[in-house]
Image (cartoon, rainbow, N blue to C red; front, top):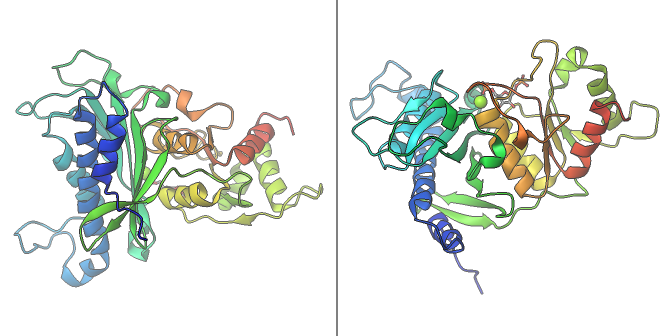
Length: 338
Ligand code: AHM
Ligand code: MG
């Protein structure tokens, strides 16, 4: 007998019913994110044809200029999200300042933070890329435009977070909080719907013995970080090791594999980048919430990423995400306990 088909819309409504005080507005916000994801997915899938159909500067069939994909994704997110009255402002990796909601639209209670197309340098070589998103409740009074204070909140206050991976299939993975579980939906392009394919994802522990880090920076790392990776590689002379290394260089892809198979993903600080490369608000925090909600651990090497208080919209943090046991091992090395 076939199991029942659950669309993302249906799943969001079912989740909302568990919360008697819910107004439905939050669910509508999640639908809009899923809609933006479908629009971006369609365009990403066409990327290989852009050389055939024309690059930036060309004009498409609607008479619009053909854009680079990251600019397209940015605009798709803003256009899908700015007018429905759910948001008071947005933050994107693509914009220096907060993105205001135009005055002609209603001002809502939520803030959306996103990286529209992370890893976009991989597009030309057909490597999977992704959109990352996070939703916060505003802290300033309602009815007025959102401010930077609404955005600079620690990750534990996120109401929802997730990502979309544009891979061999397109998947949307999200959580509405540490105790709400992590659910994955695969886009069926023939009907244009995200269907529940991965219910209640738990990050395996004991995990697959896999670590993920850009080892080209080994010489720029702290001694503690070098010793941690020596352990994983079995070079510490203590009989450790036995790990495989996997690094795509596309955060959503590396994280997605780590979430499903277990292991550890790291973007540590180095001499060149003393706070690492990844941004707190729209890269580290949302993936940290997904990781913790799946029973994993998210650390900056010393403390939970969800407790970090960002001072600026584009602040960075070192990132260690994955199975509890391996992130715990990393922390032990980094604080000098091993
Ligand atoms: P981006 O936000 O400019 O796309 O950069 C983020 C990407 C991540 O997807 C990936 O984890 C990281 O940069 C890879 O960086 P590196 O090439 O230094 O390993
Ligand atoms: Mg990015």
